[in-house]
Length: 486
Image (cartoon, rainbow, N blue to C red; front, top):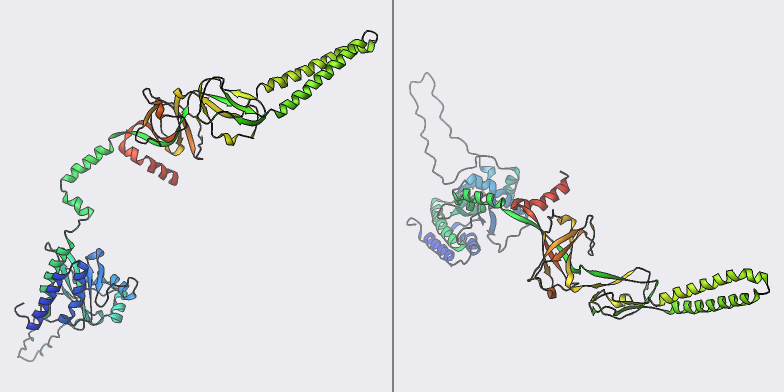
């Protein structure tokens, strides 16, 4: 900068100081686009961060934040790739496309054949080396239209490079005339300083995945080999499904006759002994029927006794005696049936166990029919696992496939079990999901205190051994096949 004027040198020093005072690349870009006006006197300046397809408008002189939907900025972003192509990777001047045509120098006409004097062609001064390449191809119509509407005679742009030569950003200045050699020299000096500050503020560049991959060199082959081995690594198929603890040895307590539930004498999950009263049905209807049957027996007996006394002297009464005796026996049979039903209105526990049912309030006052299940008396020492395996997660299960049960109350203490039976057909689970019902028995050594009947959790069912690639792609392949039909 020894050839620069004192005012230009002072301005360059001031711009360098402001660049060093920037805290972020955005502040540096704002200084480049706005503080450089005193040096160049441009109409407008902008800074494009990055290069190529990754270039983006970072700042525009006179604007704090560029408006994304501005027609001018939209045109600038779309036109910049063509301009950067004309610039190549060097600083330079792009004249307005309307004035970009260059006329070739005219050669003097050749002398007449009769003239012996030879006129030497005028010496053509060599073109002044420019650090900017002129457009080699006509601009697209949209570039030309926008330039004529918004931009002046030309654009002078300089790249800001890292120390390794990679382009960090482009600084563009819209001017009425090409800057002088002095200004170009000052901008070249400032570009080096701006680029260094930008690189330091931006930190270490982040490499793309492709660059990271290429930087590995020969290690890539080892990685490919490791991935191939990993894809072939054997793993065990597994699926997660909702499950609950059920009793494998349980007796169903059903209604012994048609009636209405009157009382529950036990609570849910209460321990009962053999012969303990569980349920009582309403006896009002049976008591009425018993009273009627008792009176009917008395009437039938009275008729039979009267006919027996008349049979000594009345042949007709003797013939009716057998019929009345049969009617009396029929009424006694009806009375015995009602009395037998009265003895069954109280349901007792058939053996020791736990009363398993929902809530007594759901049954009190509810009419039931003969054989309708009301509760179960389960043996707490024969707890098992009922698993609802969704059809979408169905596996090929081997005999005695292992199961791990993670109860909701103790998710960190899984219980181990073994599949004992599976359903042949799928049915709806309590969550209305088409599922297969699997029953599993708890392995020996499990604490029955942790497997209380009625607890819910999640079961992990393990199937056969497959490759890791198959394990990961099984569901996506099934989805693609379901979607495509192949």
